[in-house]
Length: 334
Image (cartoon, rainbow, N blue to C red; front, side, top):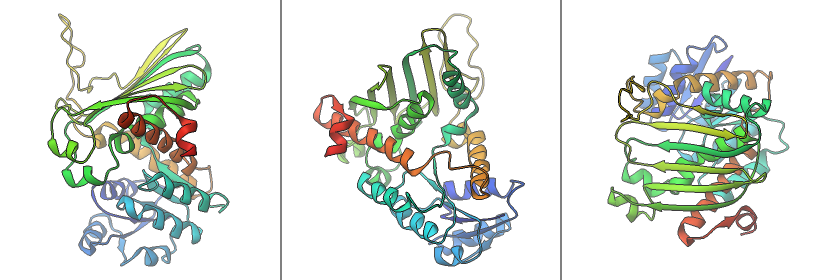
């Protein structure tokens, strides 16, 4: 099949490299507002470079991968859907929840599959964790702990337009909690602090955050995030049940140092970047999208799924600023 890629920055180029190695993909068509980026990708991956998204959609692509700037996501998703082309789009759907809802309404009855990129749904450890919940082997869950710790803050220009740590970073944890448990969040309480990087506070954001989520069956989920974890990129999940407890991410490259006498775990090179931590997940995610584009499976992460994670981020952001618990019903009505 022929896959189009819109946006060839860091993650777009990474996706182009991955797609170029998949057996299901015969050719790539690429475009970027910076013509040199498209030309470079075309030369590197044997792709065809075109001047615009419109030209890409007219090139007979079987699916399109959107890795452009967030502001462009709604327009590009809808253009592909109008053309009847299945879409993979990196999160978020849009910069705001209102725009995301507009996209959701527009694609709902289109008959075109839209796959939003929440890659943890394809990480082997997270997949195994979900299977353990679905099988019932853990018994009723009591506590879920989801962690995302970045090694260093993003640039000031990015922070200024990111929407805040809950919308930009913790939203991965929120999607994970929903997907792995199969439950919905009913209430949140969130807090945060600034431990460095003055430009984050200047943007009205925090660089370290925690959120307590109450799920609809009484399970408690604890989400922990920071922009300052110089030991490396740490993404983990713990599930504690009445029968058993398991974890995803407890492997040799975990960026954590044990101080227990004689401990040798973890002993590998710590993950330093999200793309090395989730390299396997990204490949599985794009493989899944080729199956979506071929009509072999429905979207494994829909716009509706992404909007639900976005609502949790909205509730946590409100809770952070007002220092109080916030129900999901409250933010949906706002």
